[in-house]
Image (cartoon, rainbow, N blue to C red; front, side, top):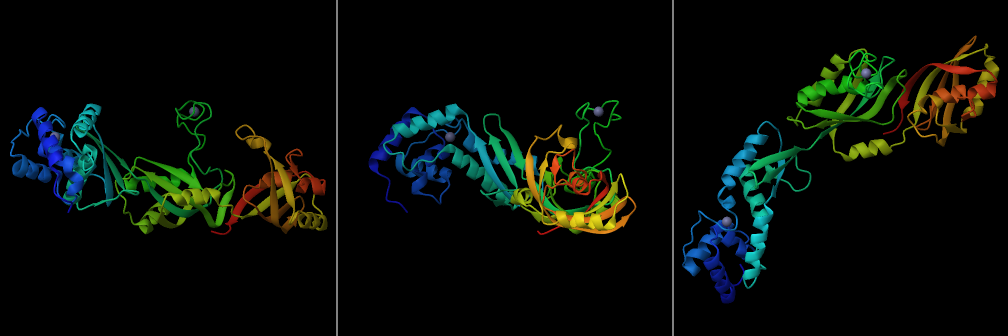
Length: 408
Ligand SMILES: [Zn+2]
Ligand SMILES: [Zn+2]
């Protein structure tokens, strides 16, 4: 415990109290750092009774205008607001009228030593947090709380933010024509028009929607964001062990959902179209990690040529591509929404699987971001080299499936 309160300080506080009426909390806060374990109200009462022997009315505190008497009431408002939300940890912040902060500064200037003073905001935050913690049996956490509560003492209004829940998993796609994420209608941009049949969407559904629908229900959440580790084309299947993704659940009322059960529900709902595996809770950092990860991808590629293939020549061509670094300008088909850039990608593996007449199947493993359709077609010379160029036969991809997303 700190040394006894200095007489000069006491005298100056006595002078302040003659000018302004302060409640016990506002008085106690001037000595807060001398008695860190005591409540400010308690300190104020002791100072007033034992030393100053002066009774001031708590009813009309000039400084806080009664806020310090209302901690119970403010805590009630906060508890009522967040009662529908499941959480373990929380943090309280507050907004205080500028005039109150000005008056606090004034008092601190008028006493002889303001080193032991504490800001009213700290007291509000601590006192309300303590009440919530005791009544709901929840922990206060400064770093990454589940719920952040903001008490606006100007209007006695409480708002709050709920931390998103992040779920990692891998998805498989068994039906062509499904984009990875929601795709708003190009004409109406989501409002709904004749072109999109008033759905606001270019496609009926997406991997995102098929996975998120059940998740939003069980987490009782207001929104979501889908983060995939790259994406396959709309008309490509996603097979093998699937593609990693993180689903961000926004504003969830539930945080502790049985993910095994959710996995089953999603897979029942999306049966025949999409399947998820290995759902687990992760933190936000996983999204960045996922976006940065450059996984190799293996594709099964069915191609068609405008002439019959010579098996030996086709085999030679695939061998030529294997290990090759190719140059790809942004494909013509996506040029309307992506910048025109040239990139280099390595073709790790290129194997001929089957060939018959003008049809063949290849297995290709390439670096993340390789445009496989253009590797085959050449995209009017924008991808070099390409299978079409090497063979001297115009080829195109008929069907494309991702059979493996390597590494994790
Ligand atoms: Zn006060
Ligand atoms: Zn539309």
